[in-house]
Image (tube, rainbow, N blue to C red; front, side):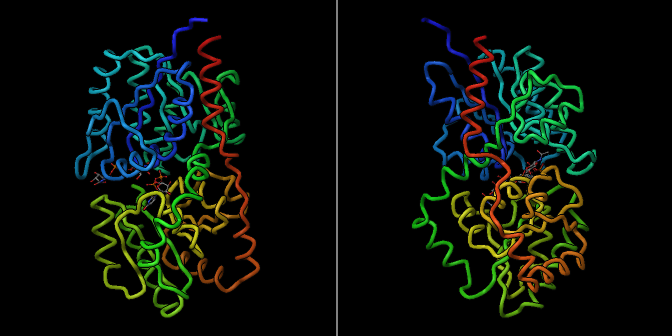
Length: 377
Ligand code: UD1
Ligand code: UDP
């Protein structure tokens, strides 16, 4: 049979999209008889993106290199939209594949739609129900869903969200979350490679709290309150806890965090870690404090409790599984919840049970399968 190959263009631009699209790229590439792949990165992130590209050995066919310091939402949106037009006109893929809820995801879906190219949305259907939390991601993902022909929902809950909004069940496929594919593909690799780095960072004999916080809605006063909670915890557990915080390169995050936490004895600030050592660091943690989306999905697999530095989450499955608890950004609230967890072994054990509600590591295979079936039917 001499069928034409399906031209698919995964488009992504930030660290979390790269982590979660890497296994999709691999799954499509495993079917060279079916797919002709061209990879496009917007480079909405530069260093954070390149770390992931290098780990998963992905060489983009198009690199738009758009990142600027302190980039605004309008700058990223308009630049990506304009530059993608030329790339899509020239290459004319059958499918544009986008992931999640970033500016890149939303804009690439729109650029595909403008060229009447079909759009597949990986990690479709996540919702908090609050337009401003996370901001602007809640609206980005709704727009991406509206623009998409196929919705790859990571969970049944995400599918239900889409059905409630009137999307046709034919377009929705529950696949699991591709972050689990990424995590499982690297978790047992390279522990030797990362041990040196981690041993130089981690203070032996202490409980380890790993922190990340970068969300726009937390910038300014909420991030300051989070930092004050970390100072309080560092003092409360002066000799028994170490806090490691890989700081996001966003200058607004760096300024606050380095100003407030730079000189605290048992708080270690680092640059963002590459994905492999970061996952191994999470694995050594007693507790994670984060506002990240992806880490909320990884932690239940690792069995590490997470206090989520947000008021709402689009990942209720992790809360239901018992690993995640929402604590917001209030200084006293974060301190109280952390101390309560450290003082209550029963509650700590309950939250540490590894229960992964996000799939079996085969989400990308399912996505490739659906895409092939849908295109050829
Ligand atoms: C974006 C995503 C958010 C995701 C986050 C992951 C949107 C709307 N939001 O956040 O969902 O959780 O990325 O990290 O797309 N920077 C660097 N080097 C890098 C990356 C960033 O220097 O490799 C700096 C730049 O100064 C940049 C700033 O960080 O201006 C913020 O990056 P940006 O992608 O605009 O961040 P967010 O939109 O906050
Ligand atoms: N991550 C990483 N190094 C770090 C911090 C995070 O590799 O120093 C990974 C993390 O494991 C997850 C992803 O980056 O897979 C999440 O990215 P981020 O928190 O920036 O974005 P979000 O998921 O909130 O959109």
